Image (cartoon, rainbow, N blue to C red):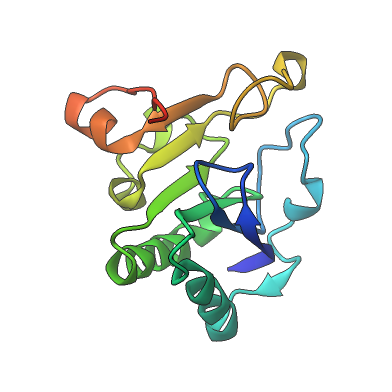
Length: 164
């Protein structure tokens, strides 16, 4: 797995102050994407032990609410196994931190993947430039849903996240 950046003290990609991992690899090709540089899975830096240590150092800070996984697409098929393993390590080491993920896939396509059970919030759906609204909170276009993963798994259907 490769990545482009680790953003620290981010307030735009989820609730609270967060660390954001911008992974490489996306096959959606959304028109107007904010990060087309991340589409190529072979670009960026290798996500190695040093990158994980940097990520975990940020997550260990008391004021950091959690991590947001974005990109690219964290569920790019070639990286799903590595991403699932990383999310499990994060959940084990930082059980009190929340995990948000942006993906171009729909909940209905991915809700049975093993990684899903370890997420707290999922923003699903491809970015649609024609549905872009600068007033939307935590999403780029109005077709995207902010899903409370735990409640959705309990209910068996997407349950929209409500900020506290």
